[in-house]
Image 1 (tube, rainbow, N blue to C red):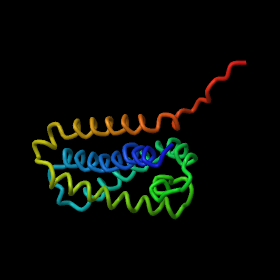
Image 2: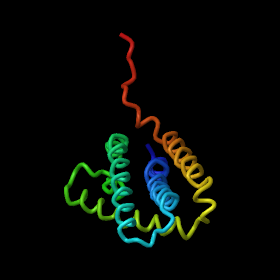
Image 3: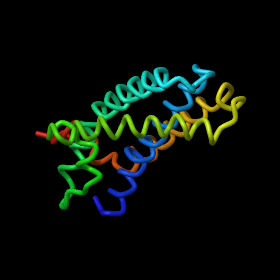
Length: 153
């Protein structure tokens, strides 16, 4: 796999969906909570969002490990999403997810109108996630298959 193809794979399979998932969490929180001035509600939203992001990172471990095996030079982006290796990196990821979830909550409130949040924002974010994953899977299809090619005996 060429470096350009690998870069597009990471971009569309991991980086863009990560940002969209943060916005999805923020939009969902803002759709459910009308009065977000309570720090308790914000903390609960951040914890729930962090759990959601951790579960997403667990799901992408296998495709990332397969792409990581193909890479000649290991990048920081790969190490960021691989949380199964080091405990300190997993703790850093949790803290970063809490902070980014809070940023996503504030960003969704500032970027989107209340009518858009309660209307079609979640649908547009989900479509964007789906399209990004499809494009990323297209670039990384050869490296992400689990079956070895059958040889004729």
